[in-house]
Image (tube, rainbow over all chains, first blue to last red):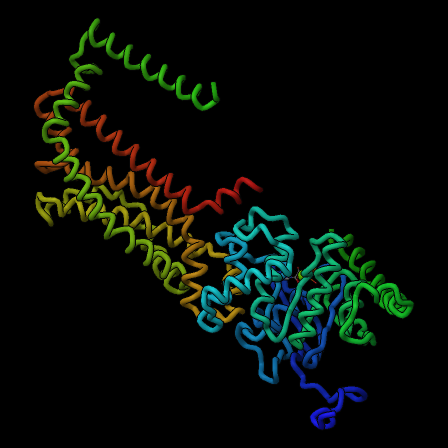
Length: 285
Length: 254
Ligand SMILES: Nc1ncnc2c1ncn2[C@@H]1O[C@H](COP(=O)(O)OP(=O)(O)OP(=O)(O)O)[C@@H](O)[C@H]1O
Ligand SMILES: [Mg+2]
């Protein structure tokens, strides 16, 4: 036996070293003014995301989840409180994150392949044509859009556009992913596949992730931590660590009894908020 | 018979009917005011053997030179001003005022400034096309989807890269719409300029014929203008189809 093997570093078991704080929102509130009325969309939200954590945000529609992501991306400034990334305040578009918005923002005049490869055309991520083609082909394969390379976004279904947007973001492997309902328009089969692919990539590239989803099952399957938002103004109702190991097998996980227990526990919190949100909307009419 | 060949057949029948009725009127009543298709055809053949191409070249050069100045200038200033909130606000009233000016009314002024050669027409065409392209590009730049700009910004695109990759292509729809306006207008401007005072060009053919009470000459010149205008229109439509394929898909799909 060569003694190289003897001086291998210790496997990372036991206490994991304290991870650096990647994203932090400190007592953040957001007010919107529409039609002369000001209302609070997000109130007193404090979130800390350590490096390489996978955080999921769930809550009823309109509770401010997208608003939170917009702040982390630097597209929206909080009315109160502060947002920092890697310890520095987020003041302009945050180029360290990849953001897959709820509405797909493909460039309608570019084909699928040209949309997906656009990051490599930029000076800061320049890649030569051959390399670009290869990476684009890889990503198209990953999201199952083979045969649609030359199609325009208008020729795709909603789910296909989502997948193209996902590919466009993943292709340059940003260190942090902000995902707003990335799988909402996909059928169950494809959704599971995509979840699996995403988990693999996140694991391989050690990405930090904030995932917004309506699907509690998805949140528990994928995340290390789930936060439940109250129906507007959005506050954090509860948060819970999800103790499953990483890397995960999302296929197998959903049949474990612990999974059902956690799912049920969070669901009991969430369903009150769904009810409150329905009630609020009825009153607003 | 396919649908499209039937359509063309119907069109041909209509054309023949109109020409026959015209010819009949000319022969049975009088050709003094309306000339006649046969006379026009003869005149056209005569001109084609003579100086028609010379006059066409003159008009074509005026339009070409005017557009070469007006279009790029209009598109570029429109996009740049449209992207700057401040500039857009400052310029707005002036733009509205300029827009309400009937541009061909400037012709006498331009003739006084630039004389009788091609310059006043070139300036007129340049001015017309500049304004039309400017308005369209300006509106286009104001209508750019900000979410697309944000998306590129998050990827790390510089302001220049965002301009080139988002503003310019998304303005293209507007630019083409501007072209579809500007090209026919350029022809109008050049011809009107020539009609007012000049010794050559297609517009001059009309005034020359009118001064000689030559009805057939007027109709022949109008026919030539119609064909030139039609070709210009067809050209822009072809260009539009080529450049805006994604756009057609979009409007058809939803
Ligand atoms: N730009 C804006 N101007 C005014 N109000 C806004 C704006 N953006 C969001 N809002 C409001 O803020 C609240 C939160 O919106 P947000 O989009 O964050 O909700 P969400 O949790 O993402 O909902 P969903 O699950 O339906 O996507 C909503 O009431 C919405 O109407
Ligand atoms: Mg949302």
